[in-house]
Image (tube, rainbow, N blue to C red; front, side):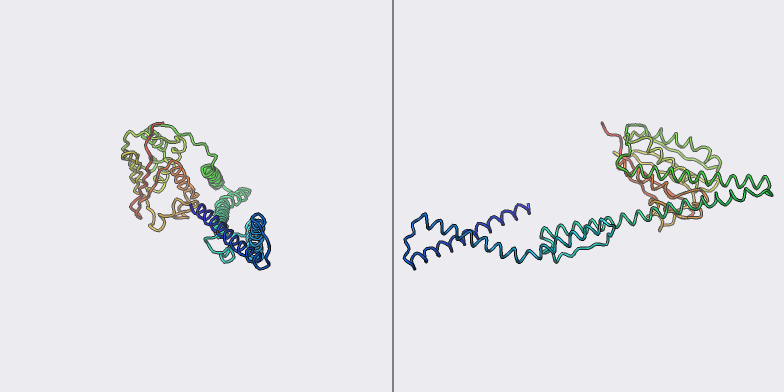
Length: 351
């Protein structure tokens, strides 16, 4: 709309200038003919008027170009220099609107786009550096343990019991590394545009019941009381991806619930949505941590997570999968009282 108005205004201004110059040229040719008593017929007078009009027009445009040329050249130079700096990794580039004739000028829109691109690239670079730092930190600890205990195992004076304990630690740390690698691959795959998404209609209650049964050794070992209430609900989703969601959430609840605690898992239909709640009587989450638990590598309690082999990626994977299904996840928790995760997913639609 704005572009059309600009074109219309430009055409009207152009025609007005031509008409003005034509009138001036016509008056000038008439004055010359009368002043010098020249016999000018209609054709010659028209030719002189047209030639004079275009001469005046091009003279005016040349004068404008000479004045605007250096400024426009400077504008292009600054823009090209900014793009080159961004290409070399300098994302702190900010162009001023002064040389771009203001924000409403096309150059102003171009400047806004370059500044916005620099800000977004700078944020991505910060995320990349933070990601590399977190991965390096997570890998460093188990590698140090494996290396340290491997050296201790070389000692000939170790008792069989000590040797067995050190071997178990090496095995645990190796599994932790493998788990971290597996989660990183899952997260990278889910965040990419090429991750296979094979959705179908299936019974969500049956899937959750199978996951609960597969986790039986964990909740039986901690003598947890289970309260399971699952309505029959059909959803349209990727069954394999959603299995990862329920495994992560249920395992987390078991992991952070003391022996003899309670675990409640519910599923109900709310209109066109299916709602899953997983409630435990575990250690709880601080209010200030609840807004960040779905971020990559975020740990509510670093020492406690390290003791249980966590890497801070499980809930991030859960959030990504649920977002992929256009659902939502929320958390409510109180310290030493327990935690409830609520997952809402769209019901199965006719395909």
